[in-house]
Length: 136
Image 1: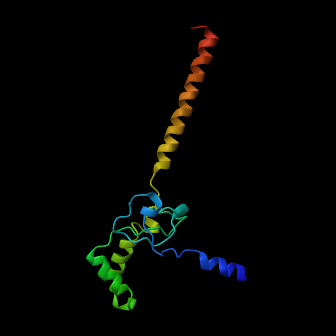
Image 2 (image 1 turned 180 degrees about the vertical axis):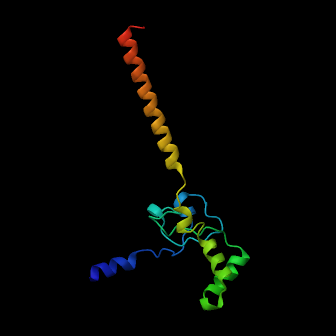
Image 3 (image 1 turned 90 degrees about the horizontal axis):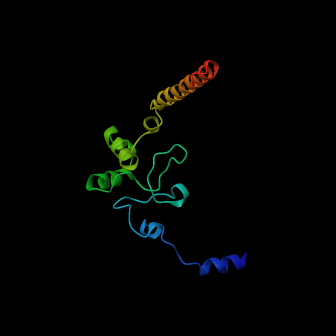
């Protein structure tokens, strides 16, 4: 126990807030807040159900968002519904229902699959009749 305490005293103090410059070597974040670890430790934004909390906020800090963040620290009952929605949209691009809604790509995939199957069927029929009647 004493050895671990002595070792932890020698470790350098890391800043709690880091920038993308320390991760990528150049800044991609801009004027946005880094608020978490992110997927695999990357400082990126992505709406994903498996990783619901991205590493950076969606919108850059502007005077309106900064004012709302100051009001957010007080009682939430004093905020109106539009302000709460603006705070949510400043942190996230889409809600869960928005980025998980069906897009309809399954229809295209089934259509292409059926087309390829029918093309294979007609090629097989053509080979069968050509070999049976010795057309070629």
